[in-house]
Length: 422
Image (cartoon, rainbow, N blue to C red; front, side):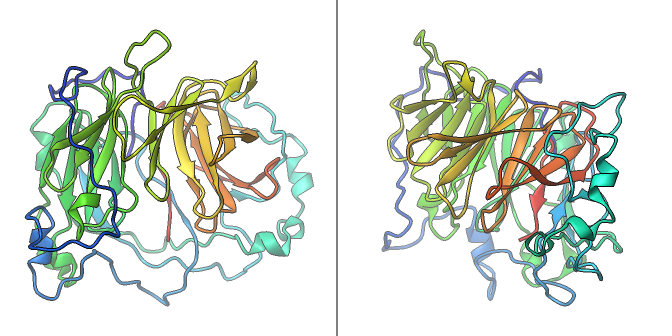
């Protein structure tokens, strides 16, 4: 999935969200609260109504069931006018545990030379420094060797095509799984967010009977969508946790009800001229209590339970020291009180969660950073940029150098996502 970024011009779909809209009742953000009475009707009722179906769509693991971390690289360079759900085989570790898969460089020089004529950024003597492969890999690094299983093509299960074919030149710009795994959120060039329920047949593994998916919710933004994200504690069994944050050009930050499709709240950031300004990136804290938003040389922090304009401002560049440029993406460590900010200035910044104190600024990308992802244990950070042929992996216990890089094809300014196998 791809996103042309904040500078792209796309067709607009008129929607709510202008500054003059009335205040909306804040969402209830206490997932632990016990609720009494009948459940509200909503989009998850179709899934729960089937007898014997689990509350979340979890496909069985195939193969030998080994838990091997692997990076799933995107297969498409540009946009596509359809989404699909595919079943892949279970990744397996390579036969030689000390070797790295093709495309992984474990001996990267910490100060890479600039690219020339499209060639690799490795210095001329990089091959000599790397040696014969496993000699320069410590036992600790061998534990992070990535295993891939590409001998079998993914099996297409179902998808959605007709939904995007009705609008000329419409294409997908991204899709994100709900935290509970029961539905999918998509963004497309018509500036509409769509929510898809997983087909009930997936739960019973009736692979041959899957119909084409159709959205159960459509949420139209008024202009180009910059970013969107799920509430991290979202559960379809608790409607009060089912909501989505989105940011679009010349609009406040919207909180959408992912159960009914209504607009539930707005967060309104203003600049130093008291003009409404749009956030370029969004990310909830892991506990969902705060919403972090990226701006030009600035991160603003809103309390999720208190919509409005009140926020904490955290500059990323102070007295020409720190991280410059538009903060294009955000990610939180799952284990440590640390968050990362990617910038279009080709840097990645690490900050303390409590006060936003700068910890480190990482450099090495050829293009503006567009996606960040922490490993499940929080020690590794994967970063990718636009027009940058590498996904860089940083060991945060030694953040001054690149642990290894993964080659990929990214020839445009589109936002290309990547993900880790759980």
